[in-house]
Length: 555
Image 1: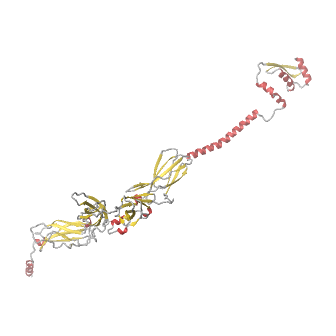
Image 2: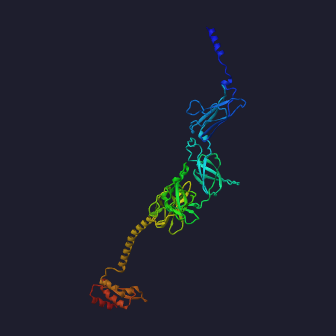
Image 3: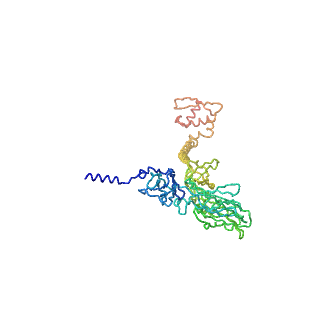
């Protein structure tokens, strides 16, 4: 039994066909070299070099694989290729998805090892191909209608068709080549050419944000026409004034009328013919002057193209060179309206929306910054502040001082900076500050307490003076007689000579005391004293006759 099994095994091994190492692993065929992928627009090409030119009847095949595929699949258009390149544009690939490729050489049953190409994203590897151009001539201009790179149903540039910009090189087809480079949009014009002249040009497409530049198109040539009898307007300019735009141009001929039209600028980036999209500018039809005025509200925020045409009866000129109007740049910034009020030693500033000619508030779709300049009315020294709010306070000012304020609106952006003219000057007087109020309160309190004290002191002083010099009560007649006018005069005025007088004081009849008294009175006063002394209590109680007699006897 074992002998039979061994014999059968021997037969099976001996009967198996022999496979050369080349057939099993491709030992005799080598892999293609210098394999590369070339993508231009939607054209996908795989290229390689033969590794051994001496080997004949060799074909090449390629496979591909995406992240969603588990196994390699045959690459359509790249099977059993006898040359060194193949086109696989027919494969419906996601141009934003990674893909891997591999290629090998084949001869009969022999195959080489695979040469694998690293994974790549087709969109990133693609190159921009040449655009297609169609030309139409005028007397001094050429209209260039451009088709973007790729096919109409291109997958590669499906999201970029409107983002392409086109660089054009034009020159006069003469012995001396003087090239001129311009950037144009599809359907755009090349101006400032000469009539009846042959011009040649070539165009290439660019994606500026990605810094990708395509290849030039073939050269196109065309002859400009005979000069038109009525030239187009030149030097188109547009300015903003208050709430209006002023469109101006130059023209040398007289007795002509003009009309102006506008178009959304973004139409230039959309493929197709947009000649029917131009619209008449209000107030700019049959104009006999070289300017027209139209309100800014006709053009909301955006970019527009303007053009002007001259007419004389049945004759019309070609349209002028198109002028771009960017409302963000051209729109005039109106000055703000200022009001303010005094708060203590500060000023409350209110900045309002500007007014139009009809005194109506105008809204401006910009983020505004306000530049405020203020100064004392008695000085030329100015101070400047910047504010983004329309309601703020200028603090720490001098109290009871007149300040003047003016302001202007500023618009600052990445592309441009603009400002309005200054507003009308507004002046206001500050109120007393906290320090002044404190001093005022202190002064009032001082006055309130000081005046009664002064009144009190003055009142009592006057009372004392009145009491001393102007007594309200008179002394008894017996005393008042001593203060007669003459006696007071004698008391106040000193005499030149002192006089003495002897008086006798009688206490009783038995004793007599002699008193010597010095006095500065005259003889009359002696008599007066002797007369009045009798009434004093220092004399005796005896009757006047006996006392008088005794006195006379003693003298």
